[in-house]
Length: 212
Length: 212
DNA sequence: ATGATTAAGGTACGCGGCGTACCTTAATTG
DNA sequence: CAATTAAGGTACGCCGCGTACCTTAATCAT
Image 1 (cartoon, protein in one colour):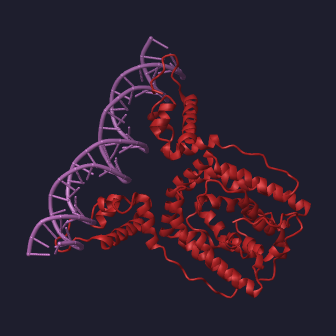
Image 2 (spheres, protein in one colour):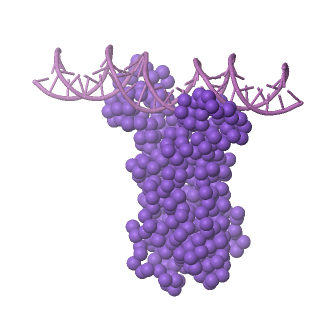
Image 3 (cartoon, chains in turn yellow, blue, brown, orange):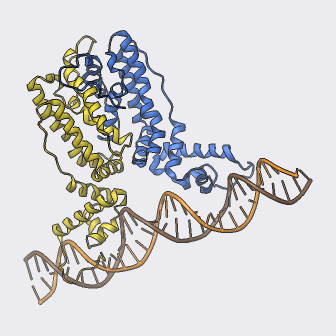
C-alpha cells in the first residue's frame, strides 16, 4: 500500500513488473471503474510508481484497455437445439456481461476512446466483429436445420440481435436489460428476420450490393 | 473577449444572460467539442464569469446538454413514395447528423453521461425514443401501400435500421458510414424484416410475449 | 425618488489528476 | 567487478472543475 520497496522482496523488472501493474490496473478497473482508475492508485497498488507505468503505456486509456483485455473472457457458444434457444442464450450472455461491473468498464472505455479507432479495435476483439463468430455458428446450425434462410448467414444480419441489445445499454443507459426485452428482440426482430428473408425480391433492389 | 463589462453595454440579467451563455456554450461545442468546452472559456465568450454558469447549471455536463439541445434541429420526414426510398433517406439524414461536428458532440455527450439516465433522456429527444416517430410514420405509409406487414408497426422493429447505423458510429468508431453500408442495412436487414414478418408462426413462440 | 433586494461581476483558491523531469538505487550483463 | 539498464522516489507544472466571498449594478417596493 505504501509504494515503498518492501524490505523482503526483490525489485521486480520487465515482464514481472508489467504483470503486476496490469493486475493492479485490472483490480482498480473492477473496483472503481475506468473513471476511478487513477495512475497514482494503480502505481501504489502495484507497489511501484507512475514512471513504470508511463514507460510502458503512453497514457491512461492505453493502460485501461490493456488491463481490460486481461479481464475479458469468452463464453462458450450455446447449442440448445433451436435457433430461438441459442439466440436467447447468446443475448443473455451479452446482457450479463454488459450489466456486470466489467460491462460498465467496457462502456467507459468505449466512451473514453471516443473515436480513436486503434483502441476501439482492441476492445472490439470481444465486442465487435469477432463477436459475430458465435452468431454465425449458431445461425449456421439453424440454416442446416431449416430454421433460417441461407441468405441470413451474413455478419450484419447475424448480429442484429446483439446490436439491438447493445443499443439499450449505450443509448438508453439501462443498467441491465430486462429479460422481456431480450425475448422481444428475438421474437419480434431476429427470428422474423432470419426466417423471412426468403420472401425478398419484388421491390427493385440491385442484386450485387453487399459491401464489407 | 475580456470578460469585463464592456463600457457601452448594460449588464444583462435572467433570460438574456442565460441565452448569451447558452449561445456561447453552443459555439464552443461546435468549435472544440464537449471535451474542449471549458467553463472558463464559455464564461469568457459569453462576457460573464463562471458564477453565472454555476448558478444555472450544476455542472459542465448539464450545460453541455442544454447547449446541445439548442443546436439540434429536426429534419422533415421524407415521403419518396417507396419504403426503400424513405428508409434510405432517413438513414442518410441520420448519417449526416452523426458525421457532422454536431454528431461528434452528441457522441461525446452520450459518453460523458455514462449512464446518467436523466441526461440521456434529454438527448434521446432527438436520438432515442422520439426518433422512432419518423420511422413509424414512414412505415405506416408503407403498410398502407402493402409494402410492409402491419405487425412491423412496432417501435423496436421500426427503428432497427437506425439502431444498426448508430452502432457503426458508437462501436466501430467510423467518422462517417459509407453509403454502401446504408444500402446494405436497408436491403439486407430492414426491408426483409418489415416485409417478411407475416411468415411467423411455426417455431414455438409463446403468443403473448411482447413487453414494453 | 430612494432604500432594499436580487442577481451579476471579479477574483482567488482548493483539489484532484495527468503527464514530465531528474536524480538515486538496485538488478542485469559481460 | 565495472558498465549498463531499468526501477524507485519525489517533486512539480498545468489544467480544469467547482466553490467562496466580496463588490457592484439592476430591479422592485414603498
